[in-house]
Amino acid sequence: MQRLLIIHGFNSSPGSMKAQLTMAYFDKHFPQIKVHAPQLKSSPLQALQQLQDIIASQPNAHWYITGSSLGGFFATYLSEQYGHKAVLINPAVRPFELLQDVIGEQTNPYTNETYHVLPQHMQQLQDMYQNRIDANNYMVMVQTGDEVLDYRQAVEKYQHSHLIVQQGGDHSFIDFEKMLPVIVKFFQLENNGHSERA
Image (cartoon, rainbow, N blue to C red):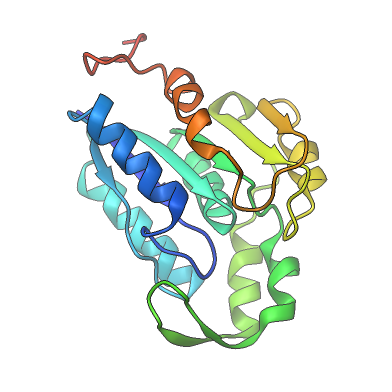
């Protein structure tokens, strides 16, 4: 049994463009793969627990993970914990530094949820940081025009992984839909639902 876990970014949701495009693509080409795209809790610790609970609910499944921005950070933690392959799209490498500027009240534009980013959330994220990674398990896609993140952090951290650096673009990853066949190839999926490697 194969399952895909889609992890959205900060102040985002499964209703985001990338998540919707991914779900539609897998529904069309790989309907046998069950897709999970949860709306994450605002607390990093609670969000991580959500994701761990989803994977733990199907411990015998063959999981694949995609994560965008902060979701890429969570995906890295999960990949190291479980050994699953992960595709990271404009990932946040050090969100505990990046999100210092947004501590305080936030409103998620997708869900209209109002919540607070707290200083302890930065410590929670720092505790999740993975110093050492298994580079073979990652494909990392960045665009140099990312206005939110410094793409060079991802290039440095994942330099030994399957790295795709596109000039220009932005944080949303322009023309993301063109990358879906590349993602499928990295996951070694075939339309019959079996991976190329047993």
